[in-house]
Length: 130
Image (cartoon, rainbow, N blue to C red; front, side, top):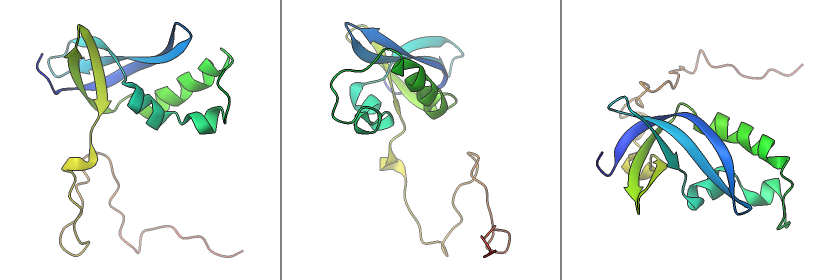
């Protein structure tokens, strides 16, 4: 497997390592092989904002792992990720925004191949006052 191989997250779980949160995912790579990979701390911080889940606290109850597992599942399973090896350990990260180019709406329709719905203004639902 080369650096930057793509895969899809098929399962994810929180894991405690010396009382610290780590996130491990099963990633099915392009070859069909499944690999266990760790989410880097910067990605964990982005997907699980500590200030929202704990506020100023520096200790968390183990029971919070159930909530964290649910959030991780909803936010990662099924997503396309990049997988790489560093110091004999596999890691994964989400696709970057760097490759996305925003266009004027009149120039071109956005790519809807990844599941985004193409809704014209006359089909959109708007709230009406009761």
